[in-house]
Image (tube, one colour):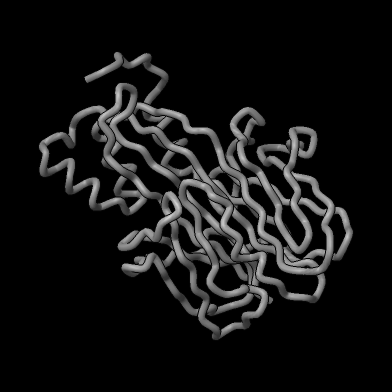
Length: 268
């Protein structure tokens, strides 16, 4: 196949990729009007970041709200430990959406490590396709990028800015304002890929009742033919929905292209 491996400890790279989901989070998703606030990027699991996101990787950052359109610059970020923080000032009361996208990178994995990674992420269709083609043991070059969003509330007035499409390659669009919901209510999302509904896609849902909770149980669901998925809000706390869409490609530098999406919000 294409380029010769320039070996940089493939097993280490595998674990870095397979465990490194990206989330845009806040300690509290409730802010005051016209006040200073912070969001932060967690690159690892929902509970722990394993490395910062360098500024050269960040593209299309934005925070949108009622009469509010903030596009962060490199000066609006700072790092602390393994976490990247984003500083901003809120505007008028309302429901806001924030997002960050990353530039693509390419990683090379052995066939065994790639299969393990696919199993870890529940990408069974890719596993079966590689098995059918007899290429499960072949090296795989994957181009990947990540696209993360957070929905947060500024003071009391609820607005429809939560559903604003950020035009990322893949993204979740809330079909309900999460800040109108209570425990026992149904939350719904539409998943878009290149602006169109993505049906029959596995997504993962999880929550934490408090910020000290670790390793909450994930629930796997599938979008319907309209790209929609719904679930019951079973508890207060921080919630996320996540997915990885992977497609086979026949390019010079990579065989597969994956786009990762997450969205976080809070329920009181």
